[in-house]
Length: 464
Image (cartoon, rainbow, N blue to C red; front, top):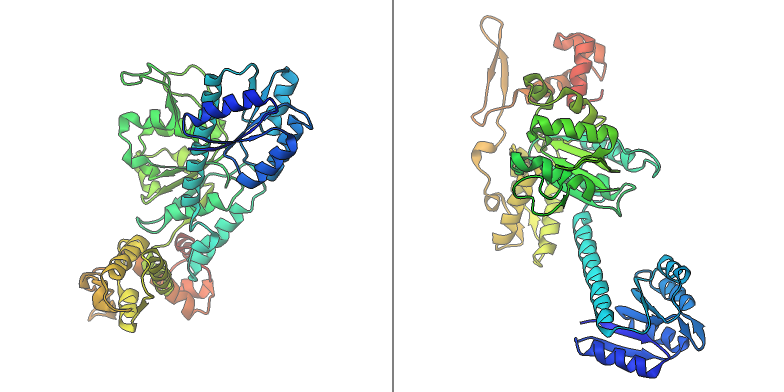
């Protein structure tokens, strides 16, 4: 149970409080003066302090002020026979958790103590989950030296450095499954101005379509058959914090309309509600879908698409990040060894070659899971290519391009296959490299106009 300190100069009352609270399992220490109260507060660090407003040598409000100065999260319940509205208001403003009038009802006092302890437990749980979510969400968690990651990190840092008074822009994070879009969202939140406020993450594709609206915006009691009680929506729960809408491309069109309204008007209406609730949140959305294609198909609202991509961030696939894959592999290896309390592990040269040549269709998530498995089941300090267990079909093969008999280009595609966009990007990179970075010369080498080249460079996040 809890450690309690009772600062009360009436000996009989203090003993009664002590017996009442010890009956329910608490440990109670008594102090009859303000000086003793201060000394014991510093010594035992009580979970709750029950403090009389008027003591022979001190004012309870002055003691309350000093307790809060010493411990900003101190939980103090003030007791007094001289209750006034002014004293109650001052006590709450100074940080008291409750204010009880004498003569005391000991049952009410026990309830007050229980309520404050429950608040403490809830605060502790919130702090735990916030710390867990923020762990590993520093800016340097965006590991990588390839141009795309350097650009991504610079944009994230720019967004995080916006002043507290600035209205947060909506952010759209795009990238393949497993690239780390959720990590980027957490880095944005925990390094920005809203780090002390909630970070609410919701996978839009995991909510049944008939419940999406109620989950996001809440509902009033009786709004539908199963609405036995009212419920706060995720928009309201994220107040003054960040709402991360993962897989936003899965949202049904009617809900998209309401999200657009919520972003533009900063208000939401619960299902079955008659009034609007104002919300102050940062919206971060993510998707592995091609939203432009969904817009063309009529499956995603064009106005919402443009409203979301005020600050677009692209997370590159692992196969396009060059030597970043080795940096990530070493970082994951170190982290996993510490997590499982194992002796140090290293990657052999053949393991690193295997990691570098593999296509990683599951991206960073697949890399981490592969190393997790290798760390758990490897019996030596060195992890070799065999221990990784990567399928041969995922290795990058040679792509041969040559002139055929009719002078037309012929391409030999490897058994593992290729992505057309990879070929397109590689051709642009090769053209720019051969042209020494000159866009005009590169466009000529590739048979493109300069504007078309610039468009495709922007598409792939390339710079000269």
